Length: 266
Image 1 (cartoon, rainbow, N blue to C red):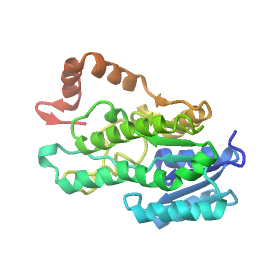
Image 2 (cartoon, helix red, strand yellow):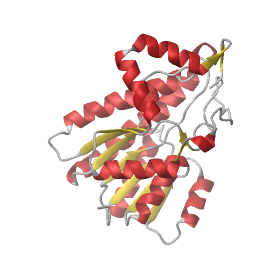
Image 3 (tube, one colour):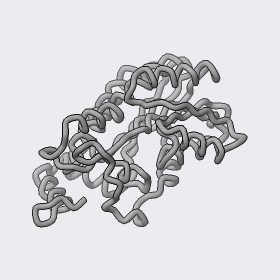
Image 4 (cartoon, rainbow, N blue to C red):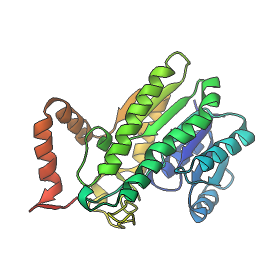
């Protein structure tokens, strides 16, 4: 299905993004990706030498960077069939301790980065009756302690993509949002603390959660089937169900899960 298709993936040098780059290249697609880090893009090009991979330095929180990335991709390949808005950042700090600039940064990357790239790629995707994907989170369905800005940004992504899907319903374009749940990646190590600097540690057992490769394969299958939404873990589905039908109980369960002796432990 993806032979000779042009797939754009933001944030393709780590975690789910990198796994998606590999998956689509193996399926015969041409891939374009971006990152803020030149060294990581260089390593990616080396790893997939000989493959149809276009890379470019871009910070998705900046409108002009997104515009340049999409325009350069279109100049080189003349079309975009699939856009996966994967670039994102997390956070881990109580709201009362968090600088507002940290929340702003999370929103700029997670929400506005998705909006900017989609805006500039939209005409080509409509022309090719393609697919737009937003990588959301269970935190976008249910607010999580210590992730106020992250939860808000992912909730915004979900509602914005739902609106976009409805607007494009008669165009042949499929709009889908994915809530992966906890996935083994660099995201938690890069999560921002209260002062906006990466915390560089994970509170989870990385060996017991879904790998980025497994997550990527589920996303590819969902794109093939032109699904509306994808929630990847039972825990995630359970959290969404509980929050919808038993919100008060969900508050207590999540509080108990995230706090011990009055201190946040996750």
